[in-house]
Length: 212
Image (cartoon, rainbow, N blue to C red; front, side, top):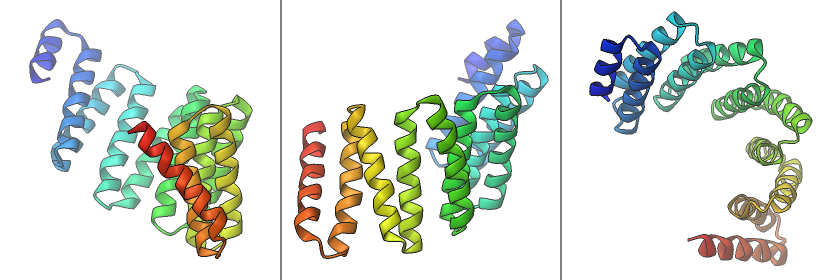
């Protein structure tokens, strides 16, 4: 990627320079070298801002946030996720607005801010419903279920997991449906509904084995 970056620099292709820097950041992140990942993501951001690539800058913000979140710096992560959200909203990319809201909701959930997380998930879900995006609706419903479960509101969690399962079955998302059945089965087992729990957990296991 350094070679690609150098070639792009010589050619004056700033877009390719940004892409090469971004890919280097991804590699460093995968290798667990967060400082180097941040360095390259910030360099990516600078080039994309220089060239007026606003959505590209938002993607860099997301990558930076992801590094901070992984490192446990949730305040910094939230700040950069919010910056990405602002850009996606301004350019009218509703799918990525919903994705950013989902990212923020997951971070808030991880930090124990459950009520705020649910607000973000509801906002994401409203956009996804309006767009007819059943795949991501299911993921948001699953996230809401996780948050309700963390709050001890298991009936609400179960309802969200079941809605997610219905959507995943409608679109033949076998892996997602397996995850939903597992989530449902775990709650049912905790409630003492062992017959239903076993049925869902066995179905989840069978799908997982089928998918390898």
